[in-house]
Length: 249
Image (cartoon, rainbow, N blue to C red; front, top):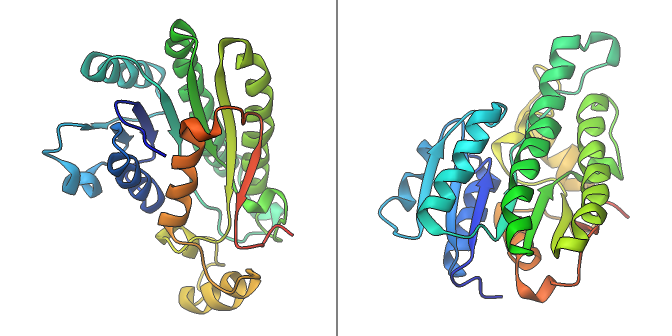
């Protein structure tokens, strides 16, 4: 699954999952542009001539335009985009969710994906080629109580990705959504109720819910992202790939 000389923009690269995706793509030979509101965690990739980090608020339209312009200027054609940015929701009854918090979840999980895909399409249409991978969540298939706003945002990512896949298919642009299962990152603990023991929740709520008996690792997700961006997946579009240890069954 070589990605030699391919250029991929990764949104949310500063998170645990995004960082692993950046590493996997670089190992596969890709040029990688990692962007996030904070890119400090990507310092170990600095000095690599095939890597560039960009600190940016990806909810700002001009900032998104700048990311793609810089990526194009540095590496030429943009072949892939991975939207891995996201925010969790603490398990909370719906009556306790403020409108501001609802908007925050929807903006970071869905609006940011829209903005990145919209800009990517402009570049990929020119080349009549490209691949977009949007990160969703197994919770869209197997919801948990108290996560209604998060589930709605990730459900929107899935529907949006399928619609966009049809729209961009005439331009030979693939769009797929990857639904991770419970993944052992800092974000996983943020789904617990306020005051709960995070380690206990990871074990009893999340790990025990995975039929294969283990939490996913960021590397598990990164490998699957790499596949969806590769030529081996050239005829896969509009699909939902569950990487969840059987959690969605």
